[in-house]
Amino acid sequence: DAGVIQSPRHEVTEMGQEVTLRCKPISGHNSLFWYRQTMMRGLELLIYFNNNVPIDDSGMPEDRFSAKMPNASFSTLKIQPSEPRDSAVYFCASSSYSGGLGNIQYFGAGTRLSVL
Amino acid sequence: GQQLNQSPQSMFIQEGEDVSMNCTSSSIFNTWLWYKQDPGEGPVLLIALYKAGELTSNGRLTAQFGITRKDSFLNISASIPSDVGIYFCAAPPDQGGSEKLVFGKGTKLTVNP
Image (cartoon, rainbow over all chains, first blue to last red; front, top):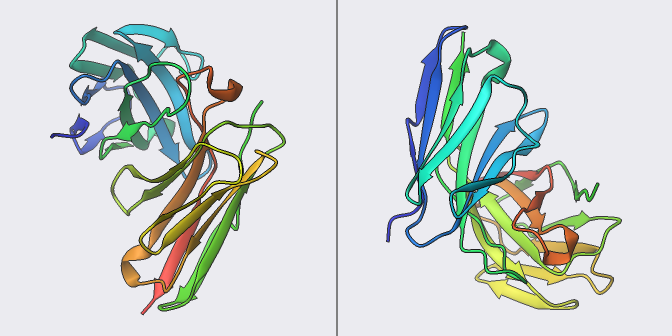
């Protein structure tokens, strides 16, 4: 069974360019999460979706960041325009949340973004 | 907010040594999760704990759900080079009433052969 698939694995871009990160969650999972990881701040939740609907985007740094989930098998995180301080590893995770205990999230391998 | 404090931040040990790390909070949690992140990869679940006092093993790893429900511990016995990585604790806030997870900042483990 395939896990969470992220693309690209690495992205190098110049300041001001648009960056799009992609994620395919595990089939059957109904929740999808976007995280950013840096040395200074650790793992930060940016936004999460449940049944393709954005539930909490309070972690999105600013208007330059946007995320969509057009269907149950695909999500994008877009940064426009990108800035050097956006350089980080971005993770997508999915879970099959049904309330109560057991909020196990499964992570993709991440996209390492470098903005020059 | 509900924060998880992990200690130590980093550890440097010799192959064969045992390792202990912990995760504490001022808040109560109903579930504790331990993840490991290998270099260049995403976090992978190691152990899930669902009951106060629970002790669960996964090979050389043993984790415990603290009696107070405010802490958890992870032990690794007879460490090997492939144990290198960052170990994160995580827990669902609001006593499980949320899909989100709160993560600690991790314990970075280095094993010298």
